[in-house]
Length: 428
Ligand code: UGA
Image (cartoon, rainbow, N blue to C red; front, side, top):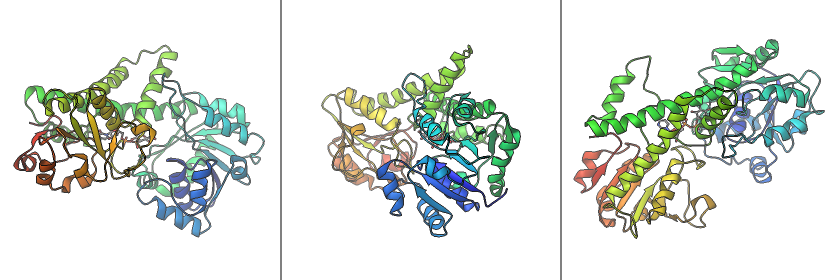
């Protein structure tokens, strides 16, 4: 079935909403269930409650053409559906274990509500072995179809995926799910459910390891006097290595890489396998964040007690309004622990009432205001707008113009001309 299937998507979050819009664009009829009242209300009123390039237009088009509608419950969405996608959050519980309560809740709602012959498709990231547990709970065949989209480019990634992975013991069911995405032209990997679930963790663990490698490389470059940007250039032309995912930063964050690496370590431990390499990548990530903290302390004159630090960027990367496990927040909290007053600006965070995850941070209306009286400013999220600032004006607002560019976003020569002492990541 290349188009025209009746599909339900349970969950309208960072994965469920782009998935719904893309399935509708591929020619299927989609009913998306969202039980959170505020989010459902926004969608029903035609608003897309997240920052995701191109998503609002795609959702509006799909709703206007009748290919997408929103309902409140999983059971309602499953009515008449041939395929039911589960796209709900599976947060970490802090000890590496995964909180599966949302998935289990959906499974219990679906049991008894599914049409005869319906296939359940799990997109939520779950511990290896969860698909068979879901089969027992729902009484339906379950196909694992891991998601590889990135926040901020979810629409592009879903319309043009590098591959589609479908895993089930019932390979016919897996293939039928794969065919739903045939309009993307992506290669299809058909496998068993355990392997598909492992592929998801392996992808994120590999990406995390790659980032830890480049962040460590930046540290090495600083020690030997090399420039990491040229090192990456020299590496990237080797097609076996490539250029992607080799930008040094203040450590990797977000709602997926930290949670999934912890979860895979736990899965490995439970299975009796010592995944020492991945553990080292996770430890190196904490070290990468701490290196940025040390740079800021140094830039501010050696200690932070009673000093003000400006912070540019709070989200875990640019292009999203998501701050879950943001390296910027981790660094900001450490700076406050060391006695600094943190004044922060992020284009997605308006000044005013301070959300609980930003407690203690002074929220500012623009990047200039964040630097007022600061002994150092730390650029922690790579928002484009930071490139076009009037740096002479920034320098004039600070008590001493020192900048730590944790994303290597800015031009050191231009900053030095504006009177700054500049510190990047792995740059001479
Ligand atoms: C990640 C994966 O990239 C997706 O393939 C996957 O589908 C998703 O998790 C998921 O499991 O749902 P995402 O969390 O949106 O996507 O974020 P990434 O773009 O992977 O970035 C993760 C972190 O690495 C961010 O803090 C980012 O700033 C950092 N990063 C990324 C770098 O520091 N340098 C880079 O070159 C790339």
